Image (cartoon, rainbow, N blue to C red; front, side):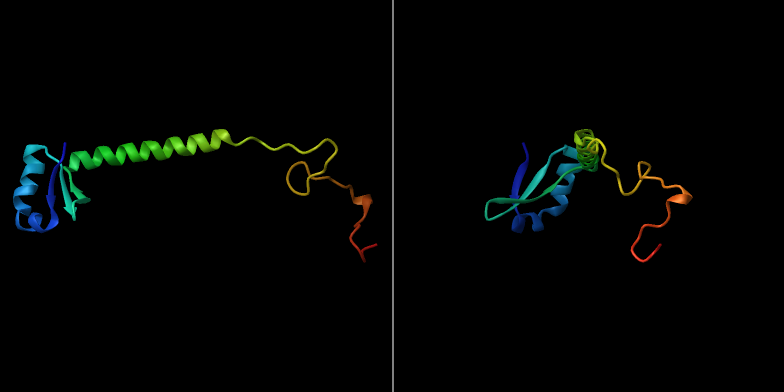
Length: 100
């Protein structure tokens, strides 16, 4: 459970609050009008939070990539670009308008 304190009071007690976090292992939540605003946490807690966030982001990427399915073209359909593009020999000529 975190120790909650109004921002106005925290200003006057900042040094004590820092000591509670660093040496007492507490988490301090600063409130404004009774609503949580920010938290003071140890650097070790922050590192753990960053690691959890990075892991969650990596899992999201893996999930997104694995959910994608390769698209296949319909039978007989020619792709305009890529390896499957139609290859015409030199005798086929240029079929663009005005190129005969």
